[in-house]
Image (cartoon, rainbow, N blue to C red; front, top):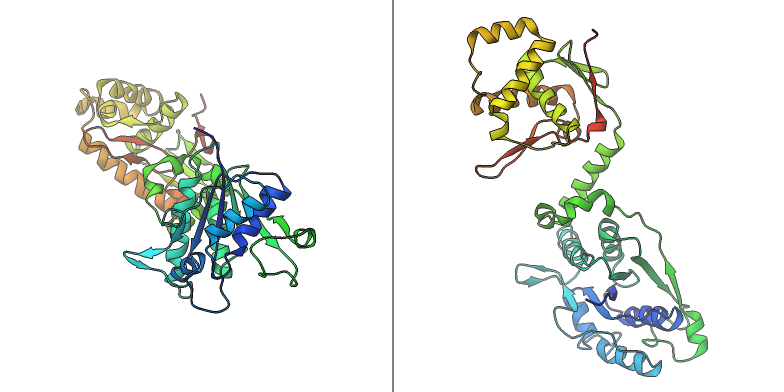
Length: 367
């Protein structure tokens, strides 16, 4: 599949910004654009089609002006059609968004922008050129924020500037003076895709709206910025985080330690079948003999789990462990990285601690 240069513009009542950006990229920077997409409102689409009745808006279709620009400057005409694929209008069910004014509009529009950019950045070889020159200021903010979430290294955020003398008199420069007055600026922005790289590929994030992704990203940044380690003191059966600590019952502590120990062996996710297997029981026997011999003798007399742990007993202990971790780490989003999490699959659920092993420190008993 051929890699493409894709121009994405936000437009309101001045579709000239599309051809002006195209001119700057294609003529001034010699970057040939393969496809053009315009994100707009219901009225903005009418303006793009040359159908708006207001005397101040253009009466020729943007598609025609793109063709005229390419013919004048001997450029290959990029793909741009007068349809919903290339002229993208935010909708609520079947109702198209007429303008960006209310709080509700400012949720619908960024959701549409986010969905579109998430899709267009899925092909690693394509380069996205996003222009924020047109539309309301809030529309420009939304596309810049969405690009910050999904942009790769080569994607660009652009703004077209021209002098008041030439502004909106035509769709593109007709002479050298007009061309010189048109400037394309790159806007620096923070790329957060690396933080979301795994989740972007996952189904769950693909189903989230923009405001939900913002919340998710904020939580990820919070977790990454926190550098405290969870201290697992085996001798004391104690978990410590920051200035707080909490004690666990011997079997509770060993279940948590079991998942940490598995991480050291590159086994991050453990199935319920492995947890309840005789091999796991054998590991716990070794833990008890080494660290809590007094408890081992008492449990050994009961012989209640010599053939393997009961799944219900493990789930009960997991609940108690997670409750105590949520008491220990008061920030909920951070605490959720240290609990024993479950990846639910019918008949094959797997359990794991999400946080990287480097954020957990084990204190072994002094011999």
